[in-house]
Length: 253
Image 1 (cartoon, rainbow, N blue to C red):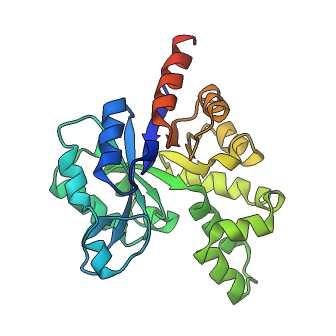
Image 2: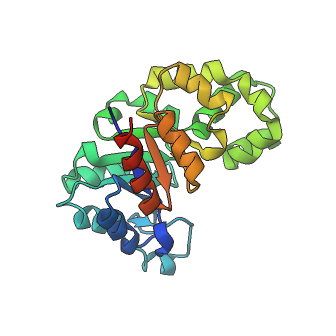
């Protein structure tokens, strides 16, 4: 039986966010993957940064190259949470340049279905945990030709605020197309927040046999639910607890 993967959220166990300490702790505890936030700085260098910062601040941040080199001799997977669409090809190029294995590279964040549809060969270069909101953006736009400019800007800039305003019942009207998009793209997993676990949205993907990746799960009861629902991946800040609970769960199965 395949165990649920445990991904250490950046800043796990009260380590500093965007730090090598967070990655080292993931290694020490035995997480399967470490999440890092990836941005392109003002010079075109890939930096580990949750937020967009000044040129001076970017210079103090880790580079993606440093992370890949640091974990090269381990089995740790790296989940690159891409904060900008422009980071996708640069991240893949950096991984290939440093010969970082494609079976240890996960791409999540703002990668769009349009990018993947244009080049299906991307799936040979890593695992794509395609974010739910990115696919819904595409589907909502396709089904709403009469969108106002204001609605379009909000959807593109802050999809979760738009989706909350629309309400989950309305989202249900987009689910067949959303599931179909994931199936056509053959994404490695549907990446979604814990608030959707157990909802009609999650159930729709599960009925279609699409793997789920859930973030950010820190509560024990939700971790148990993820294991019971055979979720592919759980991203958490509480990795000690998660690894122990995961191992205990599968001993009894």
